[in-house]
Image (cartoon, rainbow, N blue to C red; front, side, top):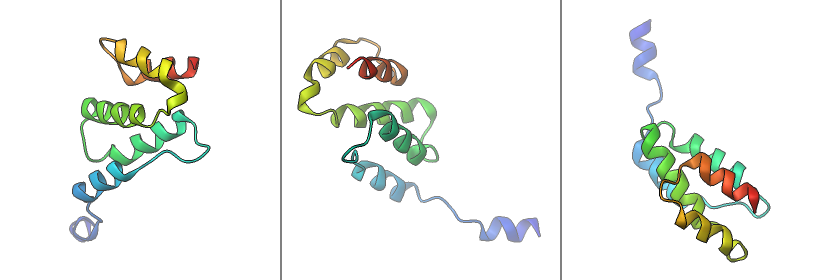
Length: 93
């Protein structure tokens, strides 16, 4: 029974998950926190935690709009920007 369960278990398609991740965009009235949460859930199964955080962080920064230029410049000035530090800075703006 275990063998059959394992055999018919849905396999995760890493290529499809990466494509979906790269096509994700922030929703019209979505907060950066909820956007990051969605991205984290998507890449959880495909990458290691360190890589995941970097991918999510880079994707989130790319969706900060023009009115947040001060926020972006502060993010760029951080030498060791972590995902938690990004969330902390973004929450200030």
